[in-house]
Amino acid sequence: MKEKIQKFGRALSAMVMPNIGAFIAWGLITAIFIPGGWWPNENVAQLVSPMLKYLLPTLIAFTAGKNVGGYRGGVAGAVAAMGVIIGTDTPMFLGAMIMGPLAGWCVKKFDKLVEGKIGAGFEMLVDNFSLGIIAMLLTIAGYLVIGHAVSWVTDGLSAGVNWMLRHKMNPLLALLVDPAKVLFLNNAVNHGIMTPLGIQQAAEMGQSMLFLVDPNPGPGLGILLACWAFGKGSTKQSAPGAVVIQLLGGIHEIYFPYVLARPILLLAVIAGNVCALSFFTLVDFGLVAPASPGSLISIILMSPKGKTLLGILGVLIATAVSFLLAWPMVKSRPDFQGESEGGEAAPDAPAPAVAGKISKIVFACDAGMGSSALGATRFKARLMKEGLSAIKCTNCAVGDIPSDASVVICQKELEERARKSGKEVIAITNFLSDPALDALLKACKGGDEGQEVLLRQNILTGLPSESKEAAIRRACRLLEASGCVESAYADAMLEREKVAPTYMGEGLAIPHGTSSAKSQVLRSGIAVLQYPGGIDWDGETARLVVAIAGKGDEHLEILARVAETLEDPEVLGRLSNDASADEIYSTLK
Image 1: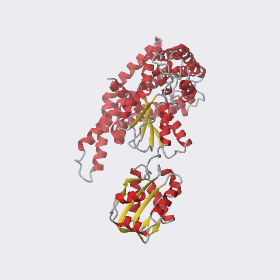
Image 2: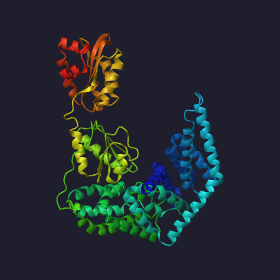
Image 3: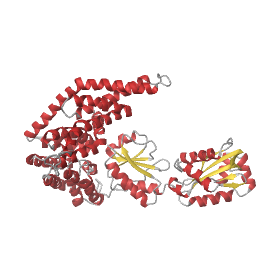
Image 4: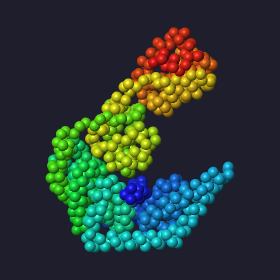
């Protein structure tokens, strides 16, 4: 049941998060140019209503449809959303979150139904007309039926929110939201629920407190300040950086591990948010648009004119309350004091057991936009400092881990979901300072130690004659498969041939890349191709092709050693004609 709820929440979030920039654009136009804004402008203010009514719901519907049914599903979702948008006077965010997935699902089901049954030449005809018919039917249904039903539900939700405001009960939302946040449902709660409802309320009242239920950085900031002031060891060392990221970067995931290590800290988080929301209720303060990311900067920018100090004060109240309650909890927690539960210093993390060469490191978080981006950026900087820029380091959502990832880094709470990718997973507690990251960096630095330059599987014998380009690309594919180079290295090898042919004489060619392609070499390696019948190499006949990829300046040493090994014409002739792969391997190794 928990997994289904999380999946539903992530689906809601995935409809809204990619379009947050558009929401912010609308919010800034609203805050600046409407009557009562920072610089009122009657002409520019005319953008506010059409963007709210048409643009934002259509973007949500397109994104939702695309998530379910690909690009065709996105187009159908956008068209279908117009039915509910035009059919009612209510901003149709909820309607868009229904019509988008529904349209994507219909397109997906139709495509599956006709798969393999369309005659050649009729694919485009069927694709276009099926999409048009599905979109038309859904648009009409949205206009006549669905839009009115959604409007009734939306009005009911708005009435409930307004009732909570009138009875000063909205601070109680923190009791539900903050526990969900710490379980990495923050994006689902904020962008899947609070943002659509908040925009509905802001359209009616000019501001909404719902935009502040999740994004307030104060509660998490108080936890981090307590860890900085009263923690020891790695807790104290990592907290200062986390404080800056939490307050100004708005990446709330940075404080979740601290709370999960001592769940009672959740009480401090909730209390801080309840006090802040109570203050906002007392002074009637809300934001004009979503604050994303949830940083102090975003709250200042989205505050109504003349109320900026109220937003800052609400953040400070949440921080102070959370800090004071977290103080004794941090001091009583052994691992916050640099010790294990038994009182001994925590051991260093063992080196990760990553199979094969580490060529791509992926940091994953729930949405792929917050803590994972932070972790990837920081670790990439560490790789660059160690001269390991050839190792790629990127970030993504935990459900979209790429197939070429060597290792995946995620927080412990997401480990189970990350392992579904089938990749090597390293679960950590802190993207800023975790022993497992230090161990991974050490493994990356020692990644080439003990690895052979020539692998048995990179030797092919008895090949039929082919073109020089085909031979070079074949050799590069072998090097790529063994983790030595990127696919683009083949083009660099061919470019080298234009500058200076690599035929060495006596039937030997030693192709290698240009100096500008060094970044495409992940580790040094050799691939050997034997052509007993020979191949044309710029007018010469090559029978043994030894392709080289050297990391840094190692290609010079490898080239010299290969030339020295094969300088005997008798040895070269034997390896070029009838020698087995094992003989070539033993000779060159």
